[in-house]
Image 1 (tube, rainbow, N blue to C red):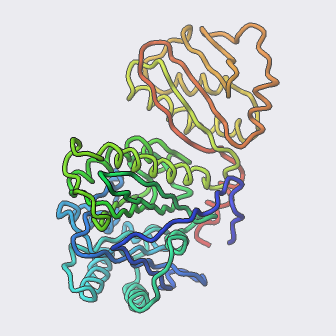
Image 2: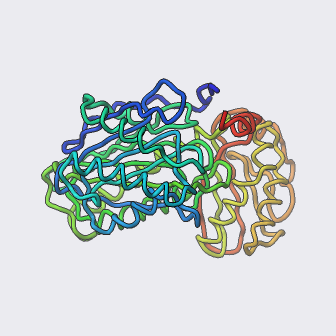
Image 3: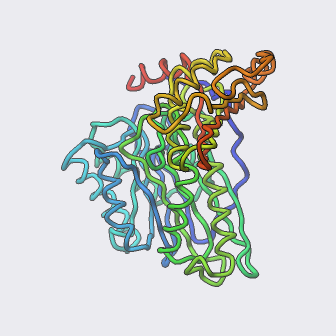
Length: 408
């Protein structure tokens, strides 16, 4: 099945190599397709690693492996398999992970705990060890590739490769951060909901990198949703080689730490928005902003109630200014709300306040806003200072077509 490129696609940006990182791709042929589906990325000795993983109670063996070895803080390789999630596969799935990490570790002369793994695709089918090992053998001798090749190789239902870059100044050194990501469906903010990888030449202690990645995740990947479904395989990993030569960052008090944190959040926000823009069948990118809630957490839950509502999402797909569905979604969120204090806007147009349509409400500017690709919905609860922003897409017939035919 071929899927047309998303209407919201963005071109892949120019992204430089990162010193200490060598990416390669190969064909493991996990599915009947003519494309690279195995990524093998190696790191210089001393590379720091941090990560966040899915909150799913049915995680894949790859997720469990990453959780087990992230506390060591060091990495020499990353292996990503696309087309087979290797999730819900019991001891067979674990055996596949052990085979992949052992082969990569033997090739590099490192410990298996320094090899990190991810897999994405169909759930319930063990990752075939023979194909994985053959793919690795091919990758070992493949020429180094660019970031767009990695972004394409880790994809499944994605319609375009996704990448982003940022930079930060630490002391007298400029450090570079690049990231690639895959994700289109089974996207809900219960950690990150996709596979994403960040690479930087900055020198930073693993513990601080973990703190910074967790903070960036909270502000970005955990604020996106396509369909409210959380994957078994979601993983975001960050690797820092230290090759930029900056004075190592150890605590938030170190000079340049704030700049690096800001750059990391910016990078993760760019990547998270690309996932939403490639939401399966999406034709609209939607930002939902909630203010006036009793807490930031309450605002976040209300925003997600709106963003995940099929009725809201289909109204946006149909360019229907049916703001009553937003009222519905606020009311069902289970969070403190008062009907007669509620205010709603679409774009810059206020449509309701104090529990009523605004006097002289004119639907024309709202209808014009909804004809665009970037939609903004604002809600003020009127109860406090809590605020949150989440990002989602509309729900079209395309989503049904893709997911009804996913395994064929």
